[in-house]
Image (cartoon, rainbow, N blue to C red):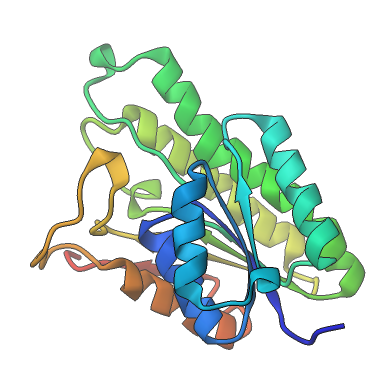
Length: 231
């Protein structure tokens, strides 16, 4: 069996997820990449330079629980185990509460909270069985910083934060490590924006990816890290 470690990355088709994929591939990781857009996933897979059998592209909608379950099963059937799970996928809808729809709140809760919960639940048993594993979660500084227009988004990120900090308590005496990253503004496609040049107040995806690798290289430390250009 190959000694190469395996990382699973959600939201891997662009932005932070794609940058993490490139960073980990450069450090010798095999990858399972998940996103809704198969063409974008294939483009990222090609950029990694990995052999076809070292990079698995999983097209799935994180709003659909059966898609998540199938992606976990496919990944474990293909690679046998996963060493690092990176919950990166996220979605945001912003605006005054009277202008937001219920389905927009529900979508954010499903993608930002339920999907990350399901992915952890899916991969954690095999990590426990093997006696090691690393869970890295990309949240947002909005998980601790409420703001006007963020009633739905902050609700999802506060919930995700509470879930993951509770999980840290569950795992504190185990060999499974969990580290949560809280970026500020990042120059990506998030919230239907286009990446722009010269965004001095925003992080670049590669900066977040570099932090992810720093945490992996340090064996899961620190357990919590805020990263921002503005504060």
